[in-house]
Length: 119
Image (tube, rainbow, N blue to C red):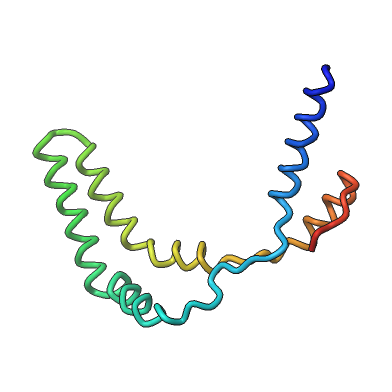
């Protein structure tokens, strides 16, 4: 390999190591200004309003599937209904995610690569 290829590969490897070894995770912390809005929308989506909209989407999908004589409309309506039903849980999981394995992964990286952990 040429020297510049080795340097480029080394820099790419360093970038991957730095990207996989975050030092801080601030997801879901703070920002209480929108807490009321989030709670209201989550309650709407999880409550009777969200279930009614999800059921409407499923019924629309059934109607579109029958009208078009294809499963595309049915799949769209069903996907929208299921997505609306599970959206609050997915958003909650993604936004409030933490890094419980950060220390373990940093130690494993140190053993494998020989890089000092950043956490």
